[in-house]
Length: 435
Image (cartoon, rainbow, N blue to C red; front, side, top):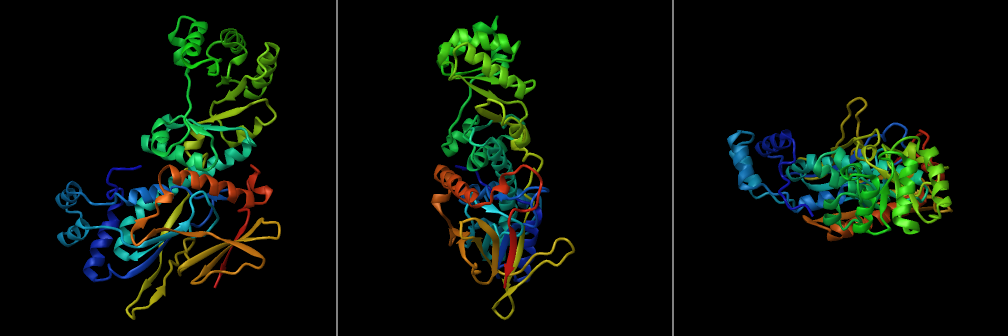
């Protein structure tokens, strides 16, 4: 899990707001903040909550070190009173939210932070960074898994993004149903299944394709996957079979017309007696390309660039808004932003997913101040994630990923079938506020 200090993964205005609120005396007012998305990316039917476990891991290390405080002082970013506050900073409040892996829709209260204004304000950027990135990746990954119709997807996008983003992307992809990742740090940190064999450079290193295949099989066994398109695909397949025999695990195709190529490669493998040798395809796949390969005899998909960039939606566009705070009379007061096209709904939320008699999701019910009651049946969506500053251990590390993946499978099974269609459309269920 994340071990380095996370407190400066923030925007400067979080700390200047803190300073000003300490000066006004409002910093310690009890407050409720909410993270939500006003809308889904264009054409998407649902979103997937991811990043929650990373937030909790980071929260454990959200401390301002002496070096960081010296930097803030030297740059005169905040005054001495604020530095004194930050020196002893520990989040002591509560956080509730959708379980990681859960589906979300427009205005779903994905995360609720209850604490003082000061504590919640300082966490804003860190929370949104993790939620926006990871939810975008998980949402794209979920669509890819749906398009694959049970054929395994492998995450292999590490070289297309920042090194820490690569780990987060691998984690998010596994939550959304990917079978494995090429990223070893993600495997080490979160107990994920990792895979990998060889690139074109390995073949080019050797004096012939045959020598490369012989070296790989000698090292990794006959069940390995051989990359057969460095030179000529047909000859590559024939050489692979000649070297590894009928026990050859798989061949990988990384270029050309993958649909047509997969078909004749399958026929060739069968003609050569390699009926159990699988075909894996890579080459800039996204959910639409995966869908177009459904009629082809493909056994697995390797996905890189499109996955780690959210397949056209690189952020979930979640925001973090103050929705309630204690006023001068000592009572909580609902507050909301009223700006055009950016209005929010005030009040502490509770969320229930309404289900019909067949257990299918019909509506996202959001109650303000109290739990909404569905007409037939419903499933409560909010779970406690942090209690009095202590994160739930079950939501972090490898166990957190396992729980999130299970939650995602169960949530997806509740949706009507149209949610898995690749065609653009509105959110598959509507959001309804209940007051």
